[in-house]
Length: 330
Image (cartoon, rainbow, N blue to C red; front, side, top):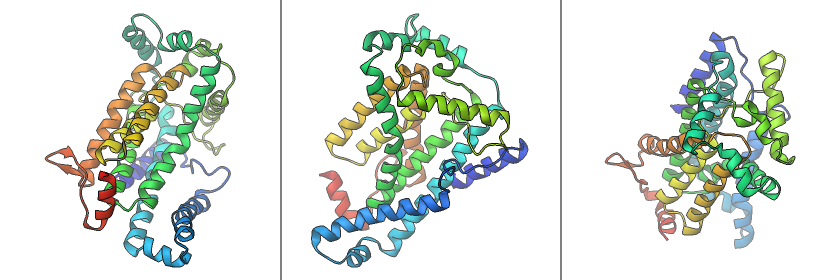
């Protein structure tokens, strides 16, 4: 239902404002080629190591692991997940054409109020320095990019607890839906684009190259959206990096993952907040809004997937997942 709603919203905005619909990651390899290859690779990683460890034929393990119901669940999840993601990326690209009012000055002022007259990025630069910290936090930020598809693959293709998998994937999709709504309501560029002079002391990192590339894509799309295959991806409020990390942290608690996973998730969440502000991607208030959004997504997805009791998020037990339930509890 969420995928259908987001696709309809994408088509509506595209038609009303005469904007193209793009394959957001299909510049090099089209999605209809790349996505099946990713699914096949994930299936192979699920089956082949087990077959080798048990010294059993690969097809025998595949039939054991991949019943018809499991295949339907995984493929339905992958297809609807990608529909939400593609719609989100296109809608995000449409924001400057629909609402060109920028709120960067107001959010920067609010940040200084919250930080007692100081700019949060300047404070972090003074405390952490502008040398090794820039490279370390750049790694933290970039590492988040593959983290999301990996966790989605675990939820859809490797776990056998479908209630947990559907809850998590739906929660991420709700993050995208709520996030793009905030983009349209309060468009922002983020400190690195609205006040680039505040970040000139930082060394060149992988994030620097990413920021330059995104700025170039935005300029190309705004000049003529039909003359480029790129999509516009700059939007600061609210921070979806923070939102999705909060979703991951809460889900790790609610489905009972091991303590080291929960602790690692919260540590990475803290590093994500610091990196997004330090590197200029987001205002501090973007992180606060992102945290609220991520928590709301978990609750909304719990209601939508039946993982709620009395209106409170609670993992739904499933008969076919009893063995997984025991391992999660352990």
